[in-house]
Image (cartoon, rainbow, N blue to C red; front, side):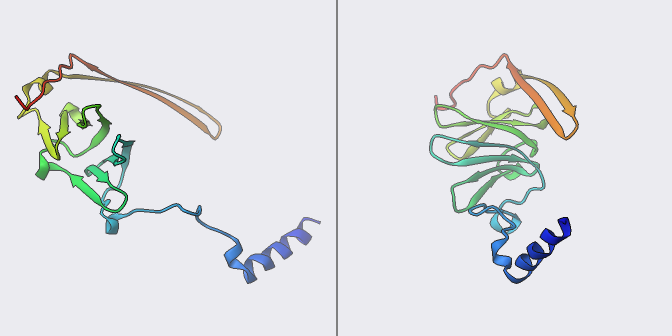
Length: 155
């Protein structure tokens, strides 16, 4: 009896392929050709101005809805594996790369520990726990920054 229903479904898909949608309508896949040249994405955030910030294995990317701007070693990041990026209330973005080479983005410029010695005082503790059952997976991660003292570079 099951085969009776499979054959009409097969004919419907064969003769009317536009009825079967392979991608979610409105979903856009960005790639290297669009300016997002990374293999892994670790974090995605949106700031108050509407910019999307993407932390990846190839630096930090800012997306304005049309094009990507990449921040990497040429811009001052000491480590391009960006695990986190948190927009701050003053318009800056705090960047958390791998190996605790903290930085922040101010007026389009990366400020690293060479420019702000307070960033060297930060300690990064990463705690994570995961739970797996059948086809379900839950991961809980907490990131704690200790001894953070923010100083404004525009003195």
